[in-house]
Image (tube, rainbow, N blue to C red; front, side, top):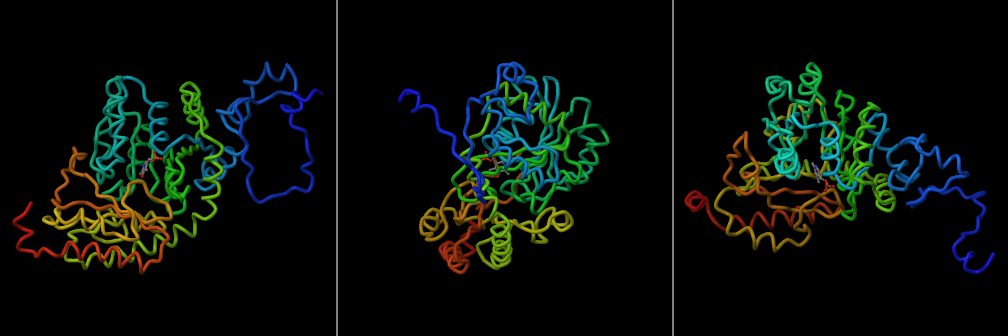
Length: 397
Ligand SMILES: *Cc1c(COP(=O)(O)O)cnc(C)c1O
């Protein structure tokens, strides 16, 4: 072999005795074949075999299998983001003339996808009250092919009666997809209630360190899996094994992270009820949270994301108060080790249930910092808002 060839051909080395706890990162575009015939027949390998890096490597298969087991599904499909998981499902089951129902509290970009992408292409959508429960049956018409649920909802945290919605949908042969990002498969398993698709933004609690973007779709029906894989193949969408390797690492610690931040978030939610500048605390574990009874019935616990509604009249103080935070960072997304706060614009995104509170909504994501330090940071922020007294607050708006 000439030197130039030696540069290109990696020597085979022994793997004997090498048994590691880490999942190797297998990268590939090309997959090579033992012989010409295998190459000619490669398409017979299907989506469980290896044909091209875009469709998976042993690293991506490992994460897929692990999420499948956690959800009690049959197959999992990985996509580049949580949003891509939602859109891949909609693109695979909806055709022009069909309709999808989405809840009014849905993760914002899902609504925009329906409005700006699906609708101009002849796919209808209708927005429903997240607390509609079995009443969803009345919204299902002949066009309706998919019902989307997200429980609790992004930002405003209403917990949906997912089992009742699924029951109504099944009665009419309609598919149900569930965005389960808040709960993770540790606290709620949509497929066990009969959902057709369980979606996770792995970006959040599975990744766990604010440094990757990935989404997953888990199904119990191989035909649905085939439909989604074909759409992804045609669109040329796959995931990076490097991101997947990081998600595999994050997943190992998810259980202890979620247990810890769930406990802290419930504690903080209770304490925040006492603040004079907090109008409402939106946390599924509080009896005042819309749908709390469904959380108690269906969920195993809490994770670390919840919201508060501030009393009106503190808006002009909020910027300085946020800028004064020492431990919390200001930012969207969540699920990492760092605690975050993000003011949310809720009103503009509501079309069915008007969002009545006048005050600003702050979304809080608890991370892994010292909890007393976190609380004093949050308390400091609220005290800066208390500078105004209540009579003034009524006048401003
Ligand atoms: C973040 C999030 C998504 C989108 O996930 P990305 O990976 O950021 O695209 C979808 N649904 C919910 C509930 C989310 O919080």
